[in-house]
Length: 152
Image 1 (cartoon, rainbow, N blue to C red):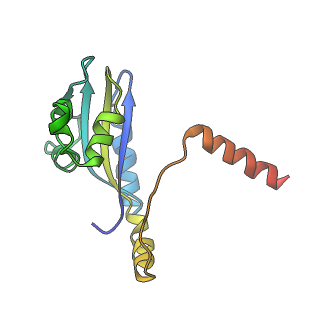
Image 2 (image 1 turned 120 degrees about the vertical axis):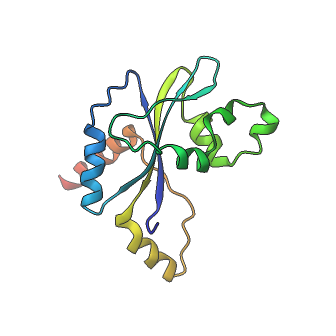
């Protein structure tokens, strides 16, 4: 892997996996932008337990194994606190905090292949990534408003 890998958690009220999202991942991979490394689909029951769901048609049969190994098995996050405390902090966030009780989510590992040269340049300059986040939709709207105000 040469680019940074993002954990993307997407919630669904009623999933309708038509293949459109996978087709977009294929287009982005062919353009050298991102690569879908792995995909795990889970539901979180009303009692907070996780269940792994079947993958959408068109997804490789072994998908989900890598995400489960890196982030922790979904079933693990429903274990008692003492055992859950041993889990990696990323697993605690991605499985317990990000997925609401009573919902379905897709957890994707996405390699940002476009960023590999930038990451390498930062490392050569002695830099280290300290943190990263994505702006929430309302923050993006504010940013767009502020940019528009500057242009007038």
